[in-house]
Image (cartoon, rainbow, N blue to C red; front, top):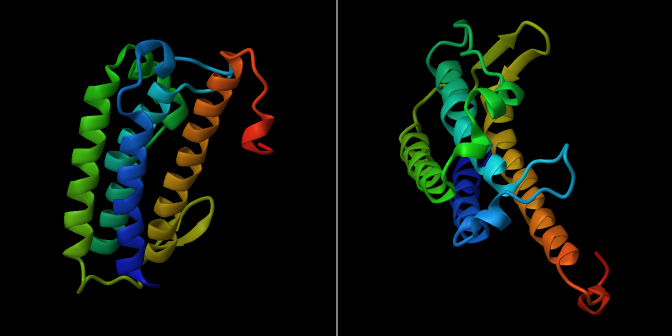
Length: 169
């Protein structure tokens, strides 16, 4: 596992997420392509919660004591419980970027950590530190793609001209 490369990707993803979410007006931040789809604000809130309570917390737990139960999470429930739609996007983005910086500082300090540790998940079996770190990067990519799709769909929904000149979506 090339941890420094994965750390660098997490750092780069923060810059991409910042670019995708900076200066969105309320209409764009809360626009959904369909009632059952997330808006950019919900994606940002989710990324913040996952940063603090899923990936970093679970990786830390696995590195420190792989036998300790992971902290409980419930991302689908958090949307309503934590009132994502009532949050302020700039504040959420600032908090996310602050948390990502803290994650990167912590990750880069783990050179001597037992990266071969794995947590025995009661439903999915062993979850290695490599799996957690790599999926953290993949999770970012998933939501970056989601944010790009949201921006494109909103543009398409709010124009009277075809977008095919730009290329096939």
